[in-house]
Amino acid sequence: MIAAFFAVIRRDLLLAFRRRAEMANPLFFFVLVVTLFPLAVGAQPHLLQEMAPGVIWVSALLAALLSLDGMFRSDFEDGSLEQMLLSSQPLAILVLGKIIAHWLVTGLPLLLAAPLLAMFLGLPEQAMGTLWLTLILATPLLSLIGAIGVALTVGLRRGGMILSLLVLPLYVPVLIFASSAVGRAAEGLPVSAQLNILLAMLLAAMVLVPLPTSIALKMSVN
Amino acid sequence: MSVIPASIGRFFHRTASPPYFYALADKLIPWLTAILLVLLVCGLYGGLYLAPSDYQQGDSYRIIYIHVPAAWMSLFVYVLMAVMAGIALVWRMKLAEVMLIASAPVGAGFTFIALVTGSLWGKPMWGTWWVWDARLTFELILLFQYLGVVSLYSAIEDKRSAAKEVAILALVGVVNVPIIHYSVEWWSTLHQGPTVTKLDKPSIHVTMLIPLLLMALAFKFYYLIAVLQNAKLELLKRESSSQWVKNLLEKKA
Image (cartoon, rainbow over all chains, first blue to last red; front, side, top):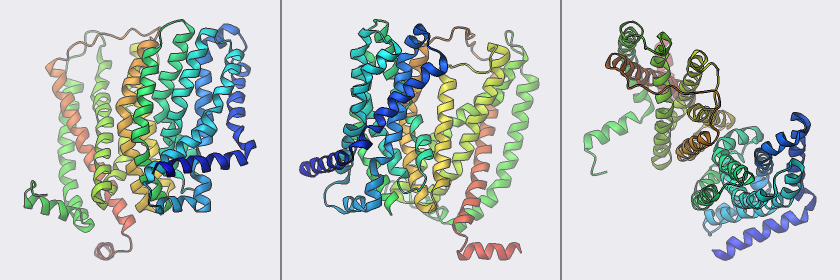
């Protein structure tokens, strides 16, 4: 079972590394969306500084949302998803492996862009560590919650719009806690409550998400 | 199963059959409509005429007779949908799927009414149509969850599997509802609205409370009627090729 779990992760990572150009796309998207905000609202430093946590987090959310569709799409199209459903290994474990691989490919790179964006928006330096921490804790959460939505819409030809309608309301708590943690850190306030809640949500989601996702996948494939 | 008396079990199984349910709904709807009308007339008469006007808000508080029942129903229907989703997934009852689908637009309607009446009340009271208050934000997100259910169902061609996927979504959503509720509440205490000073809620007087409860009951009956009508239509669409629908059409013609 554990071997199957790691095999799924290795396979997905290998597939992703074969198409390196695609891997950078969520990262570019992330930076691009953040760049749009100063252009739209004006470049006053104090305004940007105040908005920075929210802007960075909304952009991270959108980047995660855009990358979600690829989680099961190619497997669905080439039939390997059906093989996974038929395999003797528990589907929930395989699904968890796929989600983790997806996060490693699309969520983790967002960490690389974070210092650049913090500099763009003039986020105070003491908030940097918190920004990293929230990204580490909350981007896997985005992949996990999103997986349910993807599993429900993978059978649809044009699932993109509906996927965002399904997933964004579920992302609201993550957005609230992550951006408020960064905002408080920028003001020099303690943030352990927010980080603890994010960690709790992450652990709960890791346990709870694979089951409905695998049920939804079975229904989508039939 | 042994805990449940056999007669109730039989009733349950009989009601689950589409033709029986269709006939039952047909029989129930006139009665429910009569009860709804009585409750609605009593509630509105009590609320708009008998109840005294508020010493702070004057007559504009009377919108609560629509607003509060709608807001209660918006949550109630979502929980009910999750219950039906559980039944549909565990016991594979077709009728639970149909009721789930039939409830979603009605619940979305209640949520929408709660939002609109709230903002109509907010304009004279708070001086603004919209405030990012915890409850308002929560209702808005709830509305989006309803719309997600409706649009997912309409997007999937095969209605049988669509209903099951919607059932999963409703269950995931209902787990999320309390999380959203508390996180939004927490968020709004951090971002205290600058212009709004909420009036302290005075404990409600009996003459105001009774019409409110009557209206809440009336909304429940309205929900029942709307859901049964929706479910009838959904059943006809799903079973359009079956014998009982053909018999029904012949009888009507």
